[in-house]
Amino acid sequence: GQPLVFDFSYESNMSRREIENTVSQLLEVEGWNRRAIDPFHLHFCNLQPDGPYHQELIKRYSAEVWDRLLVTNTERHYVELFPKEQLVYLTADSPNVLHSFDHSKIYIIGALVDRSIQPGLSLANAKRLKLATARLPLDEFLHWETGAKNLTLDQMIRIMLSIKMTGKWEEALTFVPERKHDGLHQQQTKPLRTNTTTRGFTN
Ligand code: SAM
Image 1 (cartoon, rainbow, N blue to C red):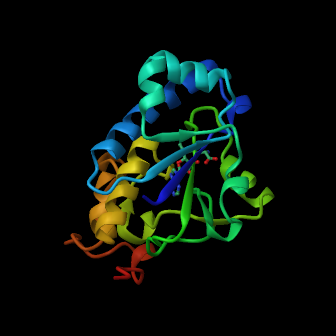
Image 2 (cartoon, rainbow, N blue to C red):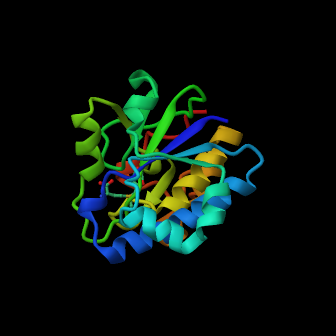
Image 3 (cartoon, helix red, strand yellow):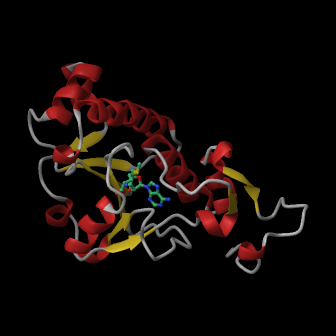
C-alpha cells in the first residue's frame, strides 16, 4: 500500500498529558486504517525507543499486539527512508492547497495535538527540512464558523482514506466535524458570503 507517515519528532514539545492524548488518537487512526478497504501502509517515524510515545503506545496496546500491528515503527527519519521529492508535509499553516490526492506522493502528518502547541510548529519543521507542504482545501469547500482549522489525527486519517478512495473532497471532508463549519459551498441555499464567492469545486 501507499505509505503514510506520522512524524513523532515532537516529543520534547509535548507534556505527558498531550502524549497520552495523541496516543489515544493514534489508536483510532490505526483502527480506521486497518478496517479500510484500501489502507495505507502506516509509518510511525522518529519514534524514540523507550521514549514517552513508545512507552504509552505499548501500555495501551500491550507489547504483543503492538508488535503484530500493520504499522512500521522506526526511530529513523522519513527523509532517510523516502526520496525527498516524494514527500509532502500536511499542515494547516501551509500556503499551498492540496487540490488533488496524488497516489505517488508520501504524505506526512505531525503526531501531535493542538493544546499548548505553538501554531506553525509542523510548518517550521517541514521548512527546515525543505519539504513540500500542503493544507487540506477546507476554505475551498466548507463555510467556516470558527478560526481553528487544525484537525485531529483520527479526522485526518478518515479524510485521507476517503480522498484516496474516491478522489472527491465533497466526500472526504464530511469527516470534518460539523460544529467547525456551516456546510459545503454546494449545499448553500442562502447567498454566498462575500469572502467565499469564486472558489468552488476543482473536480
Ligand atoms: N499546531 C500544530 C502544528 O504545528 O501542526 C497542529 C497539529 S494538528 C492537531 C496535527 C497534524 O494534523 C498536523 O501536524 C498536520 O499534519 C495535520 N493537520 C491538521 N489539520 C490540517 C489541515 N487543515 N491541513 C493539513 N494538515 C492538517
